[in-house]
Image: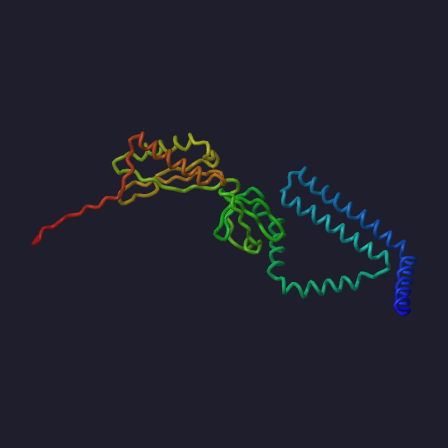
Length: 275
């Protein structure tokens, strides 16, 4: 029992001595941390606000704001540690060694972050653009350091690790997406009349984007039809909805114009025995 009391007494004395010796430093470090955290948050928001004011891309604005915030916090923590008279050199060396060793184990995740920084800085696409990469397509909802998030017309969310975007062939169609289709007409019909009817049809559908201008023309000579090609742009989030509406309108307009949409025919001859 006496030994336990002695141990507790020694422990108490150590705590009291530490508080007496470093009380002012502890209070100073706490004050520095509180002020530093508030300052870092305000500076981050200030940078973000300035970027928005100058109409900088939202993703780049967030990135710059976070960089400023983290940088200020790092300096604040270094200053707070220094208040105890502790040298930060060993800590920096230890962090460097851990980072070097961990880079091998975390090569995949770290490559995503590196690719994310490159995407944010070079801006091959921004939030709101429509991109196609690695066989998937969608509207860019958010660009993070590790991943890029797309959304589709069906409100599906597609998450792509940034390392699978950087260095790959990426198609950026910005706010809209192209529809490419063909419709066959009879060889007996006038293709000029068909093209004019299709132009009027697309002009009367508000979902079809006016710029770029829709392209309509004779695409190829098929076996049983003249194939008219159509290329027009629609809002990405209304791609299939708009395409189906246009197809229905095309069928109706060609019918009203007296233009025939042919279908393949095959002649079958029945030969009698001995022929």
